[in-house]
Image 1: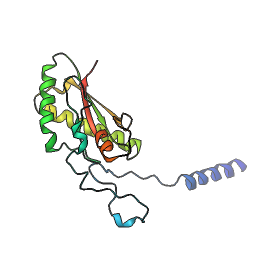
Image 2 (image 1 turned 180 degrees about the horizontal axis):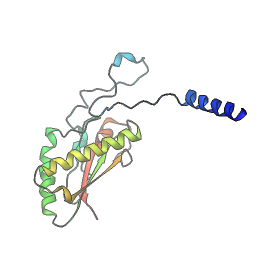
Image 3 (image 1 turned 120 degrees about the vertical axis):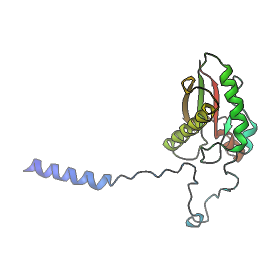
Image 4 (image 1 turned 30 degrees about the vertical axis):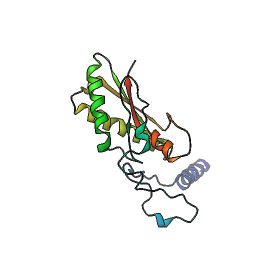
Length: 175
C-alpha cells in the first residue's frame, strides 16, 4: 500500500513539474519579433530593413581560403541573395578546378538565437550554398557541409557590422 502511494505521488509530481512539451516554431528566414508593440520601452529595436535579404557590410570581407569567397546572409536568413550570385559562380569555378579535393562548406551565424537554432540555421546556409554550387555543375559527392552555429565568429565586437560578418558560409578545401 505504501509503495503504491509513493509511486502515485511520484508520478503526479513528475507530471506537475515537467508540464507539457511544445515544439519550437521554425523561425528560419523570419524575424523573431512578430509585433514590436508587444514589448515595453526597455527593449532594443532592430532595423528590419537593414537586415533584409541582401548582405550588408559583412560582404566586403572574406574568411574563406584556397581561392573561395565567403557567402553572406541577412539576419535569420538562409536564402542566397542576388548580390552573392557572382561569388557562387566564382566558388563553383574554384571547386571544379580543385581536382581530387573535397570542398568543405561551413555554415556560421551571429550570436543571436539559441545554440540549437543557430546550429540549424548554419546547416541551412551551408546546404543552400552547396545546392547553388551543385546547380553550376559541381558534384555534391565532392562537397561536405558542416555547421558551426555561432561558435566560429570572425568578429566579436557588439556592432552591426561585426554581426553581419558572422552571418556567413566559408568555403575551403578539406584536408
